[in-house]
Image (cartoon, rainbow, N blue to C red; front, top):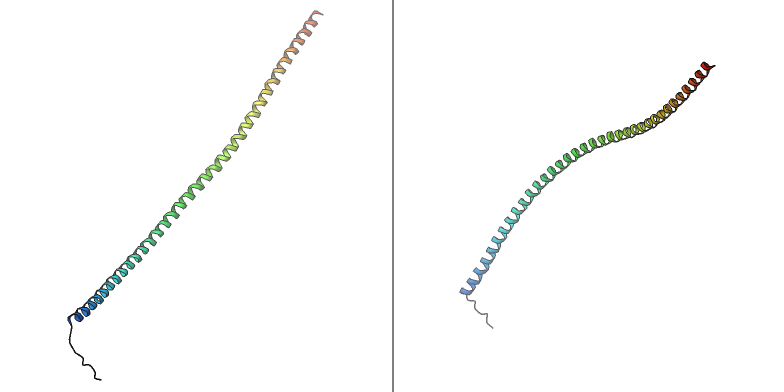
Length: 137
């Protein structure tokens, strides 16, 4: 048996197929490079956004704390005023009670004075009668 002789010829379909595979590989590597560059760019944008967002949160926290401090100060001032109002309300209630008691005492005093006035009239009348009785004797 004899070994076949190899022909060293280039067929145009083989060349086209090899060139097609080479172009596919070259395009795939170029696409991969572009994709890798876009991913890196997006990662950088994401990192920048995260840094800016962290600064935003810090600013918001500072604003929130300052507003909270202001609200606490105002609330303390309102509580102090409420304490003063409670004190004034108590004092007003005591004053009203004292006025009521004083009014009742004044009414009792008027009644007593009226009674005393009536008694004085009766005593005068009695004295007048007694003097009249003395003078006639």
